[in-house]
Length: 482
Image 1 (cartoon, rainbow, N blue to C red):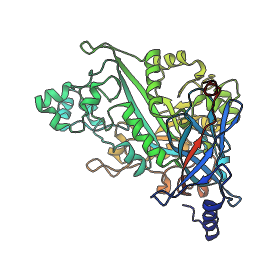
Image 2 (cartoon, helix red, strand yellow):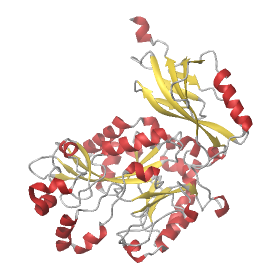
Image 3 (tube, rainbow, N blue to C red):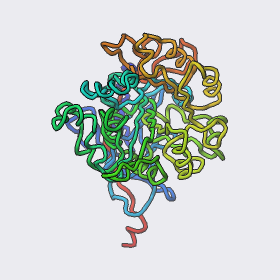
């Protein structure tokens, strides 16, 4: 964490008391001494409203990074690309006053030069997974012993993975329960425990599973336990943490769409179709603001295609990407075709897809095996693609305490690396996946930077200012006419 020198602390104190524009009149402090309240006014420029965030001067090698923690009432407000202004589109029925809470950080100017493709981080595979209860596991083992061996792992809640284990990638399996209740009474649990099955599964959220929506399950009826039952619950948990820790490097959320259940009584399962992807995106935007997501449109910019953008210009800078999420579709078959039918070339899409290199929509690649595909991963990363690979699979590496696949994954330069073992598990082995040197929360990508420069990417700053802005909005034409 950056250690602020005495002169910087003094400048901050002066800033808090004096360095306010005419539009920023300081109010008395809140009870929390770390927070400041500031009044201000959005300025109108055509169809856009903007507010300049005044900040104190910093040394030449540092700059301010501002991130929105909360907005009330909820509207889409974003930080400008240069990080100095709040931007709001002018539209009818805007509130007269917005309350915007902003966390401000001091970062290195190198953040403006680094891109998302030049970092490397670890995340979990099947991030929601809780191993089946012993009673259900016995049923699974009696029929499919090899499968039982591959699902006997349990992950912490998502917020603990973020906070304690420094995971920066999650993988979620989705079932679309269009009517609600399709997965609220798992057969395996009932078979093993009868009417009292719920006492063996205290984490099971019956109410959430009874409602319609996207459910997070590995396999219904038997391997159904989850530390977060629905997509909305998962995103709410990630969002709460992200808003309060918005210095984080971009978090990837990989989504594998499993099946759609269109009936409570009859198991009519099908793959995700266009309406299901629409419902999926609606759920995402019900929790997250679009400004929190690095979308294909953000990356494409003014280029003709997403592929040209990443291979000719590259991904957004780390400065622009901090505090944001990247969504990627795991599926590469019919589901990918259906999603591209909804969003040709990913225009207007929320998620990236893993398409063959060179396709107009290709920017992200899922390449599971870093051993067989070692050279290919290195080449694609150097070309500008974002790659996700795996350090282990099916618990094989953990049971054999084998780190060779993990080492290949790291040296390949793949930006996001999945594991079932972010920490060792008693009864299996001491195997656990961590970045070389036990670096936490991401490092500089070894394909672009030497080991001497491979320092942690979240250990260089802390929250310096927390400010509550009360911002007046000029009246729109519709208000003036009334």
